Amino acid sequence: MTRVLHVLDHSLPLHSGYTFRTRAILKAQQAAGVEVRGITGLRHSAEGPDQETIDGLTFYRTRGEASGPPGVREFREIGRLADTIVDLAQDWRPDVLHAHSPALDGLAAVRAGQRLGIPVVYEIRAFWEDAAVGNGTGREGSFKYRLTRALENRVVAQADAVFTICEGLRDDLVARGHPGGKIGISPNGVDLSLFGEPPARDDALAEELGIATGPVIGFIGSFYDYEGLDDLIAAMPLLLEREPGAQLLLVGGGPKDEALKAQAAASSAAQAIHFTGRVPHAEVERYYSLIDVLAYPRKRSRLTDLVTPLKPLEAMAQRRLVAASDVGGHRELIEDGITGTLFAADDPAAIADALASLSRHKDQWQAMRERAAHHVAEHHDWARNVHRYQSVYHHLLASGPNGQLSAAA
Image 1 (tube, one colour):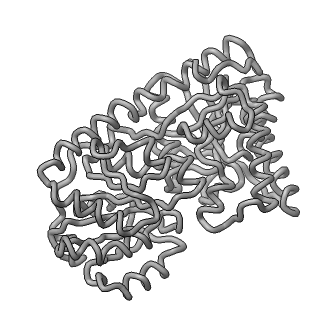
Image 2 (cartoon, one colour):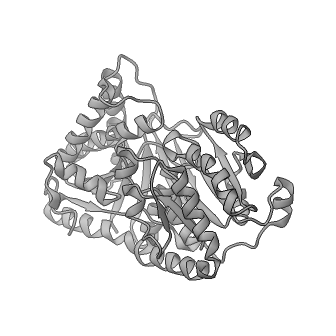
Image 3 (cartoon, one colour):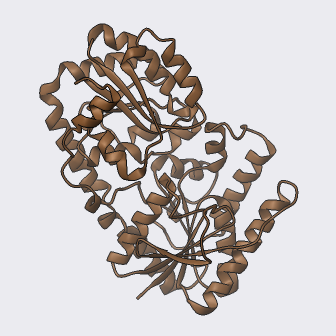
């Protein structure tokens, strides 16, 4: 049985898109007969023991701290994680190190892999310098931005095989000069075993929130600027002119929380816009049950053009209608008019037009839902897609470390 140690920024019990993708990968690999464990770096912030098992998955923690000026601090972080990987490998002997972005994890895995004489796979879920710009914690072209990009290039060059989650990220790496044959794609996916029939509408919750019958437009997630929720709020007065019963339900929170609430309060559509705040993960399904159309109005940027999000796939798997901006990350997931609706990014009027058109064609909703769910089952089911990894693992193990075999094998 192949043993794979996944090198991670953070993991369960923390809840994020990153940890849910990790859980899905590890669970699918377990089901396919791979022995898996995970190890997190210094940025894992949850309290807990050095080794813990969560949801049947075993994780190890890196202890200590890294200090110093920018650049020095990151390399100390890398060194601490690499040492912890090597120490763990003395007892639990992995065959492959599978590191997941950011590049700090990848460089730690490369260092450890060289010391242990085992191959390293590096998987990029997003370019973290662009993600920092998108969530307001970084600036394009800054020292930190350039350092992060340089570290990424170094890991891609030194890893034995590379995966990205979508074509946009892969194409960007090839444009930088990295060989395309080394870079495979492991698309965002869902664990379909977690999704049954869509839940019935929770009328008690609807009454508690003051939600009418709709149509109800919804967003569930983090309130970052790049999500474009200000454009969605700006579209509501235009939508109400054509659909007087329309409601907007915003579930979650984040850096733009207060600004969005202020914008909504000043809107002529204020009475139709509802904020719930963050809700426990176990309760999220109740809120999904109230929503007719999940809206993802992401603004156009390097981040949104290159990276495919997970939320639309989860909505499609739950047989929910999806309407999204036509940024590159959405175009990889959604076929306009077939599995969902796309509208021009950064354009409230286009959002209103698209949502009004969807509402006028309720007779087509069920067929669109079924096509979307089928698309997810065919192309984004972890039970199927996880075999992309196994093929690369086997080739690398057959050729030895630094075999640099094709990730598309």
